[in-house]
Image 1 (tube, rainbow over the protein chains, first blue to last red):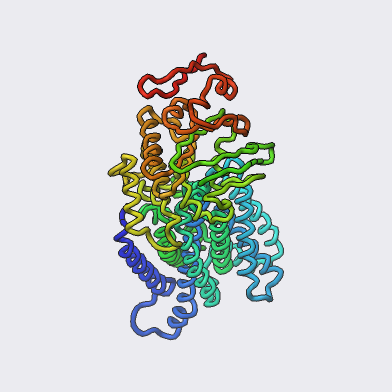
Image 2: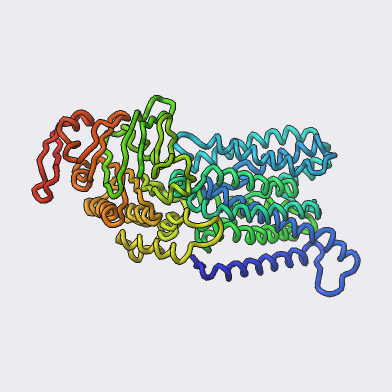
Length: 320
Length: 256
C-alpha cells in the first residue's frame, strides 16, 4: 500500500490535480491544437461547442463506469466483474437502441431505456451465475459472456433496420464513442456520477464486509438485500446513462479500480471515490489519445480502453 | 438470554431441524455434537437469524429475533463461521474491524475506540504485530484466531462458533477453545461451539447438546451426554470411556 489512512487527503488532492491536468490536456490537444492566448472564432467554436462538452462527458462517463465496476466487484466478490464484461453495458446499449428505433421522438427515452436494459442485464447475470453452491469467479464471467452474446445478437438484428450512414455512426457508438457529446448528455451523466458515487460510497462499509462473503456480512450486521439492491440499481443507472451518452466504453471498470486498489488497498471507502476521480481522468486521457493518434481521423475511445484492459484481464485471471 | 422454542428448519427437501428447544444461559460454554448433516450448522444459523425457521421462534433477551435489525443482532451475537476465502487483499486490521461494523454509521471511519478494541482483541488472541499482515498470507491457525478476534471485537455477549478447531494443529485447537472459555468466564459471555472432537467438548464444555437427524437427543453435562450408548446411537461407533487422569474429565477412545 502506498497510502495509509493519514495520506488519503493527499491522495485525494493528487487525483483532483490529475483530473484537472487530464481535462486541460483534453481541451488543448486534438486535430486542431488550441494554444493559450486569444482564440479566433473557429477555435472558440471548437473549444466550447465540441471539445468542452466532449471532455466533460468523458470525465463523467469514466467516473460512472469506474465506480460501478468497483462496487460490483466488491458486491460479487469478484475482481473481474466489470459492467462491459457482465453484459450490463450491452443491456444498456440494447435499451438505447430500442429507444432510438421505436421512441425516437421522446427525449428522455434513451437514458430511461438504457437504465432499464442495464438493470435487466445485471439481474439476469446475477440469477444465472448464482447457484446453490454460491457464485464462483468463473461462473460469473461465463454468465456475463452468455448474456453479452445474447444481447449482442439482438443488437445486430436491430441494426438491419438502420440505413448505411446511421449504421456507421451506430457501430462507432457501440464501441464507445464520445464524439456525439452534448451538454444535455453531460448534465445527465454528471448527475449520475455525483449522486451515484455518493450512494455507492454510502454502502462502502457494508461492501467491505460483503467482499468477504454474504453470510459473513449478514452475521456482522449488514442488511445484505438492501445493499445489493442499492448497488444494482445505482450501478445500472450509472452505466445506463453513460452508455446512452457514449456507447459501451469497455474495461474502465476493470482497469481503474484495480489500479486504485494497488495504490490504496481494498477499503471501499477510498476505492469508490478514488475510482470516480481516477476513472474520469482515465477516460479523458484515453479519448484524447483516440482523437489524436491517427488525426484527423478518430478511433472509438472503447478501442483504446479495450487495448489496455484485455491484457490486464488476462493477468488478473492468471493470478486468480 | 438466547432461546430456541420448538424450531423447525425446512430447506424444501424435508425437515433439517425438528422441534429443537433449548436455552443458553449467560457464561455457559455449550458444545454442539452430532454427525455430519445432523443440522448443527443450520441450528447455529437459525440462532442468529441468517436461516429462516419454518416453525417456532428464537428469542434473544426475551424478544423475538425478527424484531431486531441485522445490526442490532450482530451487536449481541457474534459468529465464527466455517472458512471463507478472501478474494481481495485485505489486512488483518481491516478484517477485524468488520466486527465494529454495527457500531458505526454508513459514512466515516472507525473511531479511536474501534481501533483500540480491534487491537486489544488481536492481542487477546496472541496476534500482536499482525495488524498490517495480509489475510491470505496467514497460516490456518493464525487465520482462525483472526476470525475469533473479529467475533470478540463485536463485544457481543453470545458467541456462535462453527467447528472453530477444524484443520488446526493441537496447540491452536487448545488455544482457540481456551480463549473462548476465558471469554465466558471473564465477560459472562455464552458460547455455542460445534465440534467433532468429543474430547475437546468433554474438556471445555459446561454443557453438551447432541443432535441426531435434526433432533436433540441429549442435553446436559458433558459426562451425562457423552455416554457409550449415546455415542453409538449417534455415530454408530463404539468407544472406550474413561477419565483423563489429570483433569478428571470424561475421555473417549474410539474402538475400530
